[in-house]
Length: 107
Ligand SMILES: [Zn+2]
Image 1 (spheres, helix red, strand yellow):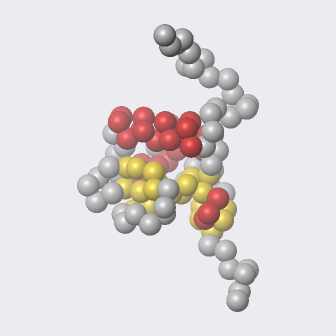
Image 2 (cartoon, rainbow, N blue to C red):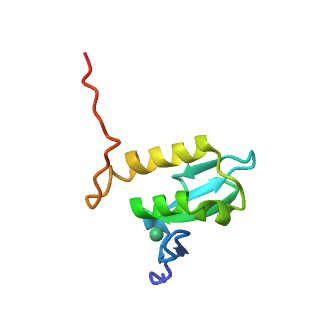
């Protein structure tokens, strides 16, 4: 069994080639929405990003995702991707402090 064949994908932000399973797939659904595809199996045009906050920021701000997916990212979709990045890929990277995080005490 050939163990050496590891599918690799290029990050649309930093252009690094990485094993597919280390990346996050973002897909443009047939409905035109742009969503994270954790299973990697959703149909539609896909793009891959590293699990690095920097790559997500680049992809969103420099419209790398939009170019890769040949679509326009709605504000809602962009916000959802940012939320995914923060929640699933860990909070902000240790390199950056984010002044947006202000905690409101509950109760
Ligand atoms: Zn990357």
